[in-house]
Length: 225
Image (tube, rainbow, N blue to C red; front, top):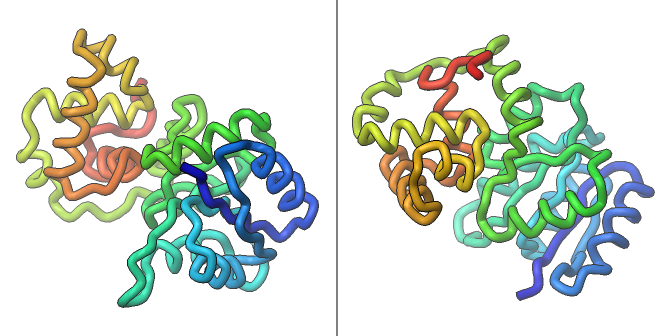
């Protein structure tokens, strides 16, 4: 199945470079580009991509506002693509808010080409892109400086079994399914089953929202190892 991608970035050379790289892959088709967030929303609505590569800082409408619009389509619009934010280390608050808004993850703009290709495939497959070495630190740092209001999330945590709570905590610490399986001495498929139940019980869409929930509920606190 071909992955349909659009690239939203205000730098023409960045768009051209990403487009050339992705279009060279047999399973990826670049179906549109846009120079700002507002145009990106329009292109997303007209091309129905599977994945939107979205820069954070742009004129007219920034990537965060554009992601919110794309991920909250008007009535009657059923298509909802995955949004992969393109960012740098100096926009931690944007990254955190983008994940809360529903973005499936983010990628550093200076990441190796192979990482970009892999990120598009991971996000298109419905997985959240949460690189333990980067995302965990960004979320933790921002959560420490600007914690979101809590609305008694402990009531929702009470619906989880002890094992499910443990799995949620390990997700928030940045462990992959394989690492969680090794840590808990479980089969990887069993871990996937637990994760599915956690998301269902908490009403969360994906792994990214699970990380945010774990921090906002106090299950994991910034600075935890």
